[in-house]
Length: 209
Picture 1 (cartoon, rainbow, N blue to C red):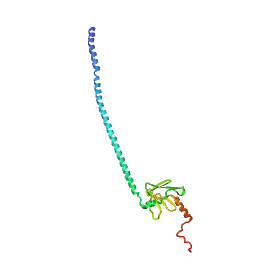
Picture 2 (picture 1 turned 90 degrees about the vertical axis):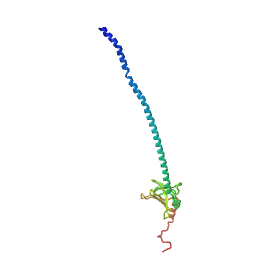
Picture 3 (picture 1 turned 180 degrees about the vertical axis):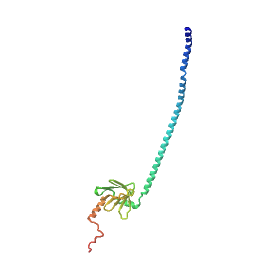
């Protein structure tokens, strides 16, 4: 009986070993299929990246063109505005004649203040008037009294020059910025007036009773 059982085991052992070997080899097939699927999917990602890069390149070029166009438009607008301002600021022969009488340079005023007046050589008749705490761009304005008058209409500043002194006012602020200002020419006139004061209309002529 034992011999018969042993013989049966010997006959079944090879079949069992073959079954185990075939079962272990079978699971390898799905792995190969997954690898093939992954390998096929990679070219699609590369194509998408190339398309995205091309799209970004077009966007950068378009933005650069828009920036260039805006810069050109802004430059053209500034040139037009400059031309309009220059046309509005054109001075008449009378105003240019007044400008020739303006005293320029550093002009001393009372209380240690000063006003510096500089002629704009690029724009005849225009002046830079500045001092401590102020800076104006002025042009001459005709007056009925014969006094030299410069104005910065935007800032509301006025420079008045007569024979013996000048003064700077700010009409918007309602105050004098500098007073008793004298150029060398005005100082000479002021000293002459002190030595020989002009006769008042109320003074009686000499020799009259």
